[in-house]
Image (cartoon, rainbow, N blue to C red; front, side, top):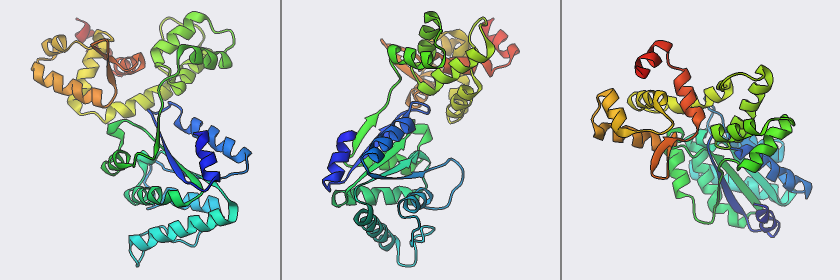
Length: 317
C-alpha cells in the first residue's frame, strides 16, 4: 500500500480496497497506513459508515468536513441539479482541497454499511482519481450476507486498477506475538489452542486471551461475549433452516457430515447440500482437505452454547 503514497505525491491517484471478515484487522491496517501518510506530511481524512440508519452521503460528509473543515456541498440529497451535478461538485471540492493541502489520503471505512448514494459517489470518485493526487482507501467485509445488493455490485464492478487487499487470519507466530503482548507468561499450549480456535482472527485472539486473564484457568474454553456477538450477527443472516442445520452439526463434530445430518434432521440429501452451500457462501464453513468444517471452532462453540441444555441432550442422545 505504501507505494500508493508515492503515486499520489507524483499526482497519480489510486484506490485500494481492504477486504476481510469482522475483526480481521481492516481498520487497524488502514490506521497504520494513514499514520505513515501523516508522518510524511500527507493530509488524511476519514469517513466512517455505520450499521445504524444514517443520512444520505454520511461518510462523504464526514470526510469532506475533515478535509476542508467545512464543506459548501449539501450532501443530504441529490440536489435540484441532479446527481451528476452534485458529483461534479464533489470532484471540484476534492481538486480544490488538493490544491490547498497537496497529496491526500481519503478513507471510507466499512462501506458494506454505506447507503446507495454514498456507494454511487464512490464509483464516480474512483473514476476521477487518476487526475487527483490522492489515495482512496475503502474497507469492507467480504461476507456476502453482510453486503447490500448495491455494495456487492460496487465491489464486483470496481476497475482492475483498484488494488484489492484481502486479509486472512494471523499465522501461529503472529498469534503468539499478539497473545504474549497481552500475557507475557501465556503457556505455549494456550497460545496454540487460541490460534486453533480463532483461526488467527486478531479480534477473537484478543477476546479469548482477555477472558482467560479475567477468569483464570478453567476447564474448557468459554466463548467471550464480544466474539459471541460478532458470530451471532453473522449467523442471524442465514436462513432459519441453514442456521438450524449448523446448530445440529455443532453437537456432532467440527467436521460437517452431510449424510449424518440428513439422517438426524430427516431432510433430503439435496436439501442438506443446499443449506450447507448457503453456509459456505457465508464463510461460516469452509472446505479443508475435501472435508467441510466450521471456519473456526468459535463458530461451532457459539452455536453449541446458544442451544438449551435439553436440546443439546436430545441431539447427543
